[in-house]
Length: 66
Image 1: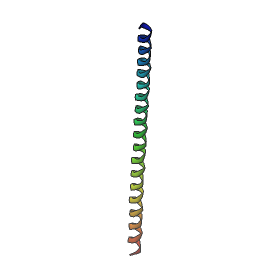
Image 2 (image 1 turned 180 degrees about the vertical axis):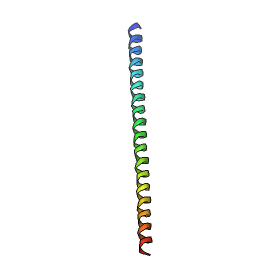
Image 3 (image 1 turned 60 degrees about the vertical axis):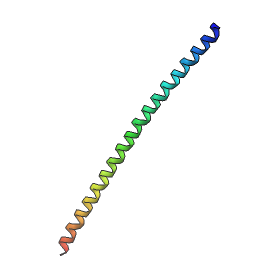
């Protein structure tokens, strides 16, 4: 009986360790997702800014032509 009890406790400990590892992995994934999201947002902003500059430049050229 005692031996059986010890085995159960060991299994529980292993399960707890696995759960902790999974939680840590999830946190890492969330951080990674946030970084990727942030980079995407920055690149979108850069693209928008480039587009604005291009339009401004185009407008200036149009004005010069007239």
